[in-house]
Image 1 (cartoon, rainbow, N blue to C red):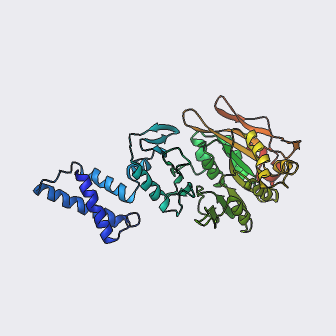
Image 2: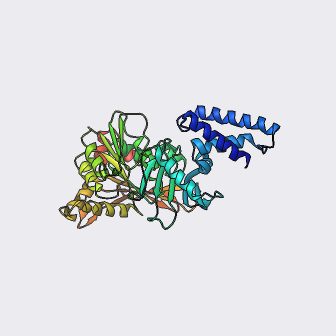
Length: 406
């Protein structure tokens, strides 16, 4: 038996005897591992036990297995890794700067099963035959998504989208080249003025990061209520209540949907409402809230700003047969002020490619738009449109002409 295997067995036995929870009692667990390694090195000098070649590496591997996530922990600790996913025992991938790569890690089926249990444990979420999908958040804010067979063909699918310290302001985001300083200045002023903003883009385009930076511009005196499937937003310390959905129990009861959260948020005296991601019928509740004069922001999967507006005119129809396009289209036109579209470039860089204004008019089933900023040869430049937000800017003590760089 290899030295590391002996140490692992001894540590696990002592953990069981002492009733330690390695994830909660990290200091005591570390002290225990140090003591076992020191004792093993002394015994290996006086016996035929295999020599431990690298005590520091052994210490990390044992701690990773007990208090971390085993072979995945090195990627979760790496600052340049954004996401980790498992397609099967020999298919563990990571994403660095938006570019995916296959790692050399090979797992067993049992290791994958154990990892899933460990990943879901801290959040109280579950995944089993009756509930083969699970969304959860790790203590550090990283997001976990699990899909079990037979929904997947053979092996469970696991995605860990790491919580990474990202730019916390629009100016910081502009400094990374995601958008121009002029566009950042306009968006900051639009948030202060109470504009209703939808952030659109494909998966991994940077929607949540952009929504976070927009939310950082909300005046500190305002009370913010956020609704998400899983906690991802991270606002500065302020009057902020964050809520997330809940899966049904084993008996099929207790589910809390995003629609429910949006409705409850309206009863909590919000000055501003944030929706982590609009996917279905909750779009109707969001539109009704915005149309009633409550400023808000949210994210939406779409391929362009125009596609995002089109999606907002159809998703509310899922709320019931009594909801018609004749009601939804003018409501979208009257409720949404700006759509900010972001995209991921071929090299993995995230960019804002469009900022479109919705001035409030609609013709038939088409909502009218104006291009405030657009992308030309990879650069965000001023478009021909002039936002309709002049009066709201003025009430906030701002000049639309100046904020647009005119």
